[in-house]
Each structure stands twice: as structure tokens, then as C-alpha cells.
Length: 103
Image (cartoon, rainbow, N blue to C red; front, side, top):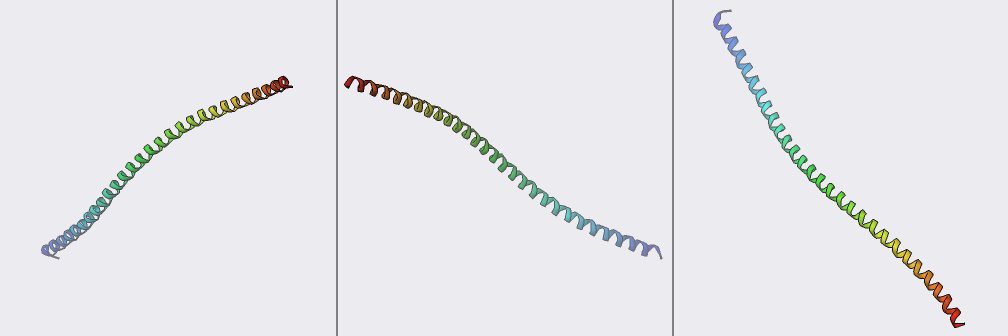
């Protein structure tokens, strides 16, 4: 084997390595593009999650407010029930007193 043949083999080897590196670089470029797309999708999902968390916080605040209102309404109903019972008792007492006066 002479020097020219060896040089040709080395050139061919470098050419093949160059082609393989080009193919690998192409695949890396495609993977980077896919990764960029995934990162953008993740950013979008994070933004949506942040929005959902804010909405959940708002709903929790509204629920707390409604619970407080319900507590006040319940207290009001209990007070009204007590007033009705008191008035009913007094009505009964007055009815008895009126009946005694009439008879």
C-alpha cells in the first residue's frame, strides 16, 4: 500500500466521519427544536396553573365570605326563633289573663 492509497483511505474516513457528524448535528438540532417546543409548552402550562391557582384562591376567599354570611344568617334565624318563642309564650300568658278578666 502506497502513501496515496493511505491518504485516500484517510480522506474517505474523514469524509464518512464528517457525514456522520453532520447527521448527528442534524439530530441534535431536531432535538433542540423539540426541547424548545416542550419548554414553551411547559411555560404555557405553568401560566395556566398560576391562573388556576389564582382562581382557586379567589374561590376559597368567596367560600370563606359565604361561610361567614351563613353563620350570621344562622345566628339571625336563631334569634328570630327565640323571639317567636318569647312572643308565643307572652301571647299565651296574655290570653290566659284576658280569659280571667272576661270570665
